[in-house]
Image 1 (cartoon, rainbow, N blue to C red):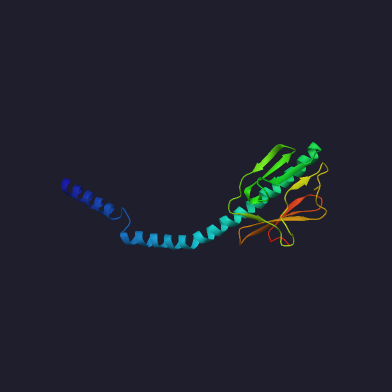
Image 2: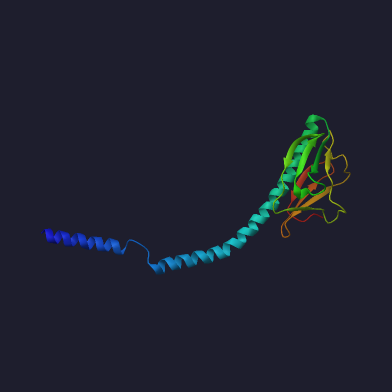
Length: 170
């Protein structure tokens, strides 16, 4: 009787050992499928990341302009949005009330700020007056943000309200 119980236990252990893992063939098929899926997905993911960087830069620019307009009205003073270095908006920008920095944007990664197709130059800065309007603009101004394949247009209308468009600027 003890012999029969021992044989039964050994048989059960062998069955569990036989079904306890993956075979080499199963593992190789799984890794091949995973490799194919990654090969298809990674280029699409890179394009997605690049498009998101442009979208984020356009949002940051729009938010800074809205903030500057709001502060100009609240403080009843001029507020300036200007690049941190020369006319290179991609190098970041600051929002200032006189010499006091209210907000600062760091360097944009993976996005270039350029002039609109219809503009002769890129705006050097935006100055909001105490009434919330751009002090230097009689017409709509544009900043184009791109990475070469994705474009966002930041449009600042004649009364100083910014908005974004998912197309190249006119």
